[in-house]
Length: 130
Image 1: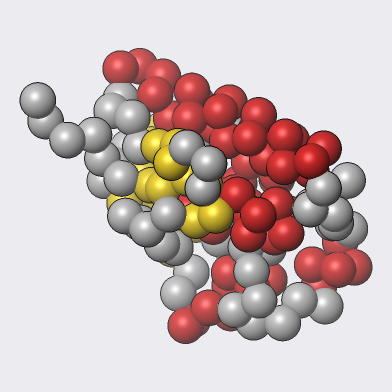
Image 2 (image 1 turned 60 degrees about the horizontal axis):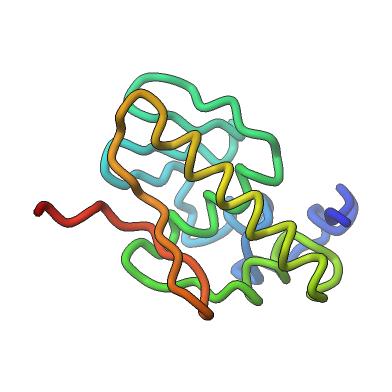
């Protein structure tokens, strides 16, 4: 189950990946990585100049990852940020959403940006050449 609007509004700055905390985080409002841009106040994400049209759940997950590029964000942390419960069902929902989000980012032949670290979580990084 997704967090309600009330819980997002009452979020503590730097407490997690929800939109309110992201806006408060070091006053940074727009995050960039490779050809990806996440505009937190507008709730939009772009790949190059093309809007991604993400659902709120996808947007919050992407915002969590773009805040910490090249670092592994544990699955449990992502689940805690966007789902009320961190049980197996919540984790599976996050895994499926990250998978679909990754596919959206790869549309049109773009390089893979979201990588799974088996048994741990996910990281945002560019594919290494080779």
